[in-house]
Image (cartoon, rainbow, N blue to C red; front, side, top):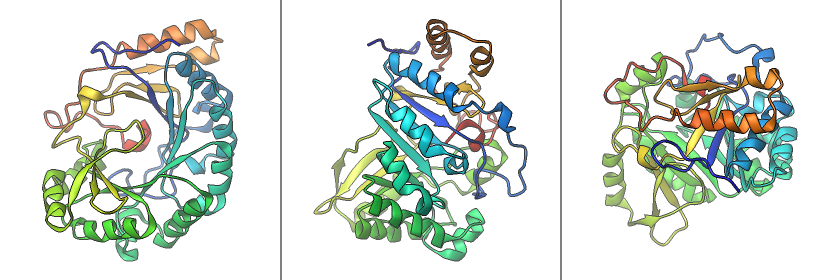
Length: 326
């Protein structure tokens, strides 16, 4: 099997695949409440095009794919795509990031299709606060989580964007919720992605201080978790609960970055915090063959920068998170 290496010697083995830029929630740090400037469906990669691209990545050594959005479950027939990807040679890990609002309907089909792990966005356990942050109903998410648990997904990771003055008083509550249900907790710092992200950065919470706070209440041991993501984990002694800290601002993880993002329109983004990109859709629709597609992917990976500049240039990235793929 071949491998992909960027100009800084990092092996690329993980693709975050956005299947839509649309979402049924409006989290205030991600997408403006009235935003409607979405990609048109004819600009989306079709399932056969997605399969071709991911198969090419797999031949080049990528073994992990995460389905993202927007909210990926608003894309019709997503379990069908998942099943097609899960059958690709060399792809060992297929996971999904979701807000869980549609998991009651789709959990069993996704599990049967070959999705093994879930990341679920959940910033609060309080219904009114959830409505204020997302515009949605907390009960739909909680019901979706229970459906996913019943369907046999493991692990199920809860992604909580920690925000000063918004939900920082709930972190211990979320720990206890995860202990009760056997979930993993991942705490995430806000990032200056688009106007919404920069506004949320005004509520930035340094997760180093949160970790110290949790250490006063719980005995924290070094921990590890399966997956290709950037979280640094601890484990609460005497339990199976692992808590991950995703710290793009206070303690960036660029030196070990192993991933690229494929947007729904076929644009490859080499870094969440830079503008380096490569357009695959025109090549696919012009009939590129497999060998040249692999060469194009290598050309794209050669554009991958060394690191983001969220601290140095917080106004640099104007696209919203949903446009890139979570």
